[in-house]
Length: 375
Image (cartoon, rainbow, N blue to C red; front, side, top):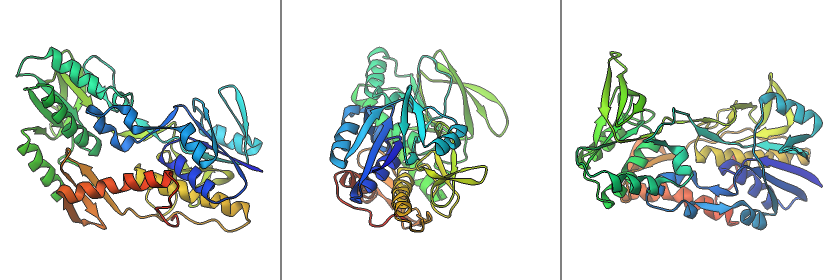
């Protein structure tokens, strides 16, 4: 019986395991992850009002349904380790030896770090389920209507967190001001200008301040230091608490693969080690963004290529194209595109389209193939 080990139980890792399980091939499947449960990280902005537990599904529970064994292990390695693992067909983690026939590295991404000081929070805090507690604690202490809450970053994560936190703050009696600060010329710079204009109008309607061309430097006491990217001028802005969402990076490192998902080491493919998800970069025409959408399709393709290799068949290249992208703007609004970036969808329709991929993946984990053939 061939043994497949997957490192990382995010969207890519689970998509790979479920695809392998569905194939009804006699395989021994194993998942290694540092956490005990899969977290729907695309919904972390909701933890300002929703308990984190509602976004978690235990790996043991998923493994029972899809016939894989779960091992809780801290995943730490370097690129040099992969070449050695491929040669020896085993890896060492947590003082334990794990032999394998195929290894899939799907360790995902982690937030870009910042100096940790009182009054500053980020994605890591939401991942730990602290969103509601941060808001409640802050509102219980701040009585001054002149106080400020700042969100740093003009990307989707920061914008979604901003609108969810605003509702949570107001529900806890907050009467102060809220701003979003970004170093870019407009919000979501990877999308056309009309998306920025729509979100900007929503900020105005919600009485949220928008500060552009300013990069965050540090926070101290009840203010933050920012610098104008055009002039270099530094200014202090009042901010009792600051949420920094400065993006994510591959964890522990970015792993380059060939078009089939096999890891490359000095341009040589490691035949039995694949990678998928945010930590991977496929040398292909397929989508390489660090999104759940790309991670799922990479994970499923890698699974199909492992099955093809077992059967002595040709491997398939990764060619998945982005189908759409949506940003929620609170509980009753969203904006994004579907089919083509020129086609903007907003309001309740956009919110429904944003929720559809979440439902699709949940059904996939439940045993229903909602994706068709991987690409």
